[in-house]
Amino acid sequence: MLSRTADHLFWMARYMERAENTARMLDVTMQARLLPQSHNQENRSLRAVLRISELEPAFLERGEPLTQESVLRFLVSDPRNPSSIYCFLQAARENARAVRGTLTTEAWETVNSTWLKFTQLLKDDLLAIDPGSLFEWVKYRSHLSRGVTTGTAYHDDAYFFTRLGTFLERADNTARILDVRFLDAEREPRDLSDSSAQLEDFYYWTSILSSVSALEIYRKVYRDVVTSDRVIDLLMLNRSMPRSLLAALDGVCDNLKKLRNDYSHDCEREAGKLRAELQYADIPQILEGGLHAYLTQFLARVYELGNRVSETFLLLPVA
Image (tube, rainbow, N blue to C red; front, top):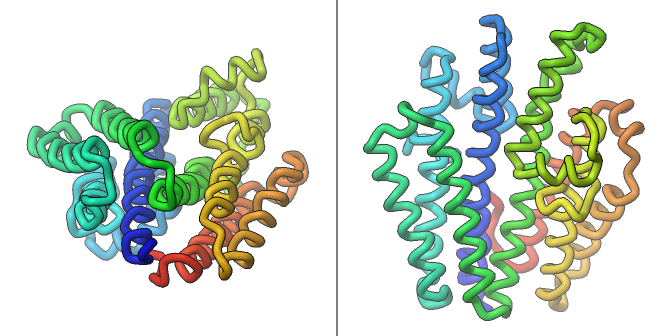
């Protein structure tokens, strides 16, 4: 397969997944803000979203007030921000258009209509009226795109590059969603013996599970109260959970194996090492060393793995 075609398919899938996961991360933040919070706590939660997306400097450069409305506009509808949902869906559509002949008609129409409908929803001001509904719509369209691709595409290299992009992006973004909770936690530890702090913790972890469609799965697996260590175990180490880090890396390794060529050994080895280290990780040890520190290192290695994929198969740098 031509590296240019593979690149477009890889990034089409990554941008669609990235749009979905940005919607998920914002949904978590909006749900958490429904809890009673001080002005400082509200500001910290907004800054946490910007930091975890590595966008705080870009936002502050604009000189806009740090409010929920300004952050949502910046991360959802701003065409000047290349990391907004607007730009992600536009980029997914442009990459799909570049390889229109490789996609099935159903796959192309799904990606194209998603972009067109999203711009109409923004014109209808749904972001201001009901941001939660907009986030749900973005998530649904991403599900639809994956389902149509799986159900209609011939399972050849083009399909495997699409799936590789999806799983690599999912590993990155699930780690980021988890890390939102811990970005400032080590600086300001709370006393969880306090009943209000316990209630806040419960609602936060419930919203985390809901944001990755895992609340029902949690109840099926644990049949008990929601606790942070179990949520972390489910979303990091349970390979039967579709959006867990381990499940995402399984997908990365499986698709790399199907795309194997004479130059892919190092790329497969790095992916396998990262999966093995996660597979045999111990949650108490991770928490003792700091989850934020662990996830920061994990994200750096996923980024490096993305670079290796590009160098091995695509010959183009990671964005």
